[in-house]
Length: 407
Image (cartoon, rainbow, N blue to C red; front, side, top):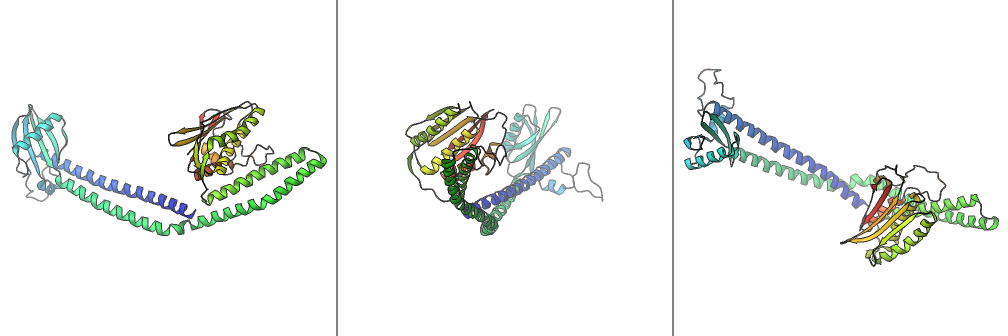
């Protein structure tokens, strides 16, 4: 139990840390790139306004050309080249004074690729470009973004390393102190399990005595509504005690012994009892059992799982309703499906049905023998998970509920 809780605590804590670090990493690097892109746009707009001629610094204080941005030093340090071409893409002129790694042939290739795109701005390889058209003349400004790309990469690497180191430090911290965090929860659960186990064992003897005395009274004085009520409530309380003890045992994560079991035969034997009960209540009972399915499982626990599912279906299927049960193999999976008719107005979240002591009618004082305590399906899911499977419920349509166990 403590290992499972510690693993869950570490998993959820590190998931939260991972999400937080990813948000910080993405937002920081994303904002950095957006700022660099806007800076590049400002440089290109300045080049367009100045027609590619970078103005000299103003001679008088406060004097500044209208197109000169405050970051003029960034423009002066930028690497760019300018190409002029006609509408046919023929190169008319090329200014390579501000860049050292391009030839006229390369510039012509870039300009033709840009004109073929028919876009006024964008990216081509490591360059950001802006097209300015005047009459039949295209002036294309290419800004080398290599420094920005290098800056962004360095920022990504540094922030990624910081995030990774932070994640590892948090993992070490959470792992070391996880036991202290879950210890109060473990202590509470242990007390609860111990109470349930002790109470379950203590109830067995009084129940047996009550049942035997009630049977003796029925033999001596005959059967009446009082001893029938006593008998029904003793049976219900006995079932509750057995389920509570099973739940406590499963919560202790005791490994159930497993052996190869012909579950097709086991299911057939269990269903026969419920078919007879269904006939008495005029319930249509259909079963589809694939023969000779062998499964490495615990026969007793598996039988209890089936019994709980069928008890639940018999309790909540109204007279003249129907129950469908199937056992099939789907590749490597074994699928058990139990479907029955139910109240068409029932719109409860199926997951609530697996909560301990959850009751559809929320009643706690029913005298009907078929009424349960709301723990059976919780035990069924625990058994299913302990056997390596999963148990789910859903409504295939209005007025029907389906339980599916997959192993």
